[in-house]
Amino acid sequence: MREELRHIDLIDKHLTGRLNDDEKREVERLLDEDEEFVKELEIFKQIYKGIEWKEDVKLRAKLDLLYADYKESREQKPKGLYRRLIIYSGAAAACIILGTLFYLFRSKVEGPIINDTPHVVDADSIQKQAEDSVILKKNNTQITDKEDLSEDEWDGNPQDEIQFAFSDGKSVPAESIRMVKQPSPLSYSFDGQQLVLYGDSGISGLQLQIGKDEAGEYYLKYGDKLFNLTTSPERNQLKEVQEGYTFGEVQDENVQVKVMPLMENSLPYSGFTVSVRENASVDKNYFFLEQDGKKHLVIDANMNSDSVSVIVVSKSEGNSYYLIHNNALYPLNIDATENTPLEEIDFAKNNETRMFMDRPSFPVRVYQIIF
Image (cartoon, rainbow, N blue to C red):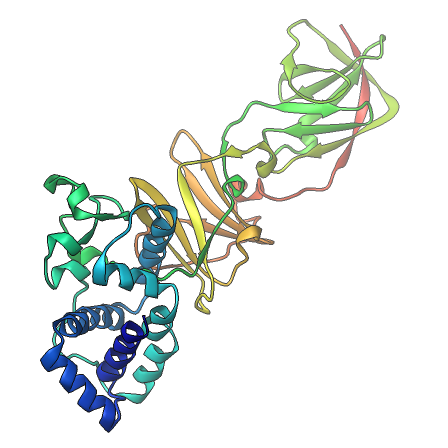
């Protein structure tokens, strides 16, 4: 174990030009005598080239997903050098390759480490060995042994990923990813003094009238329709009253009406998953990845994952996507596969975004209603 970590340290110093004289002699000796060290050096050259060339959050997020899949699939145990690369990524190698030293040597060394045009490759692309091969399953980020898959299941584009995992993201709770259909059926709860309405967050007091018949039963007129109001703390669907009626004199009574925001009419949504990068960049960005045939939203911003909600507004003309963090609202583009800025918008921007606002309750007069 110590020898393997020593090799990684020597390789890092060799690639960043920080070897002392004794270390230079040791590297020269290893290059002459140790074939495994030569192979490791070539792999790390490719990793460094990919990181320096890309140097963006998308690459890091891909690595996040790889590492998450590795942790969830402990029974898949890559062998040899590649197994060590994955394990080290969660500890010393992650710090050496993707942490402080990488940015430190960039600030001290002029120009890139390697001058040829870099492109990211799989570790296995350096040298193929069936007994020591870890690949990505096609259309997936799952790490698996090549011998466990048929040839047509291999990933056909090995330059798409680096099989070296570094995880610094945190998943957003599934219950914070929601969907609401618009328009939604109207529902309510009513305790005789306060009427709470769900389903249309844009309802105004001018659209509502409340009536009370001789038997003390309440009714709600919304637009050109009349609905019966049953006194109940439970949430019920509004049921339309079909018989004819007229409104009479105003009564000495008001009902307080509370129109609930869009979130209160939402249901859990499993169409994609969401994670927030810890130690994110100062700028607020996001993008979508494909994982297991399912979209994954990566938020590269200094946000607490427990304070993040993602809302899908489902409409006949197409869905809208929004991120809510504390009191800030951000629209999302489901087709954004590149790093895209999160741009905050005002909740009052349009009719749709206003539905996310928590509005104060308002009084509505009660009229006599005659059937």
